[in-house]
Image 1 (cartoon, rainbow, N blue to C red):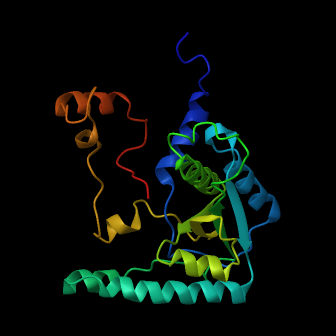
Image 2 (image 1 turned 30 degrees about the horizontal axis):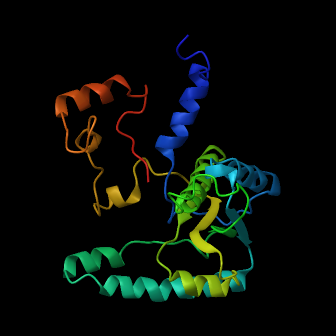
Image 3 (image 1 turned 135 degrees about the vertical axis):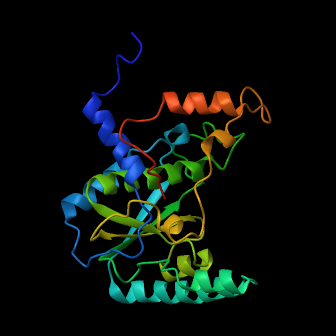
Length: 243
């Protein structure tokens, strides 16, 4: 029977709620510590992500030390200033300067996730043709952790405005490991209804119907795409979007 392995309606609703209400948090962090049992559940969720060849290439660095986080924040501040100056349009540069783009010192802990792309675990299965699959697998671990965090009422903010080599030196990451994500993790006062970059009018959500192709790239049918998406709209999702 189709769907015989599906979750119950309430369980499905919870999964979709986590997906649609997940946010990239920057501004609403509280200093409350995250209990070890909660952190353990988040890490276990990340560790159960899919990985090519079952190689499990992710490695986690839990960063609680204030001095270490201050060093990372200094790297962010320098990269952020340079990024702001890269915008030639004055209005865009001003808009960028008004954005809060990291909560490195606002959260009780940061989490750095790196990838061991050379790991022998998995015996190379699936990597001969697409060696970058180790990186993609690690990103799946980030997403797992992010969704689990939303279910726990924990906010996550991904900091990408930092030079990877400098960050790795600061955290003493071995050279053979690849930086994937630096996350600010902490409880929040609230989760925004919409992504902050949408409410701040930095960018809008693309229309998914315009991103669908049928059987080959370039074969688009707007009416067919909209009919498909309307049929699969989760109840109660409304216009909520994620990021």
